[in-house]
Image (cartoon, rainbow, N blue to C red; front, side, top):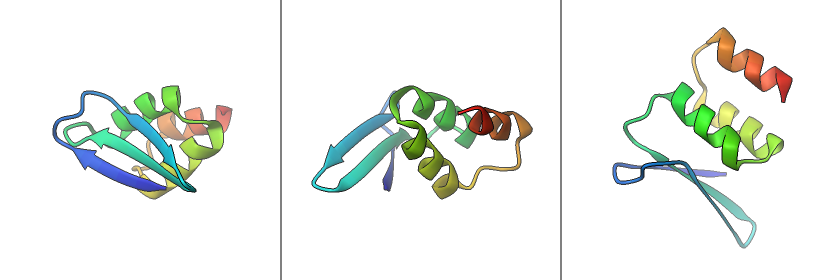
Length: 69
């Protein structure tokens, strides 16, 4: 998974190409906000991969949400 932060994006964008998944995320959003948006556009396995790649803080709400998926 390739993660791109962009100052111009208003939302999380998922782009899948030849074996590569790119997730473009707004630069101004905190990790927990990105994960909330990402949960709407990514599959559960893609979301888990993004969650691990972003290494969010040990926020119990985010971890609980991941466990539910």
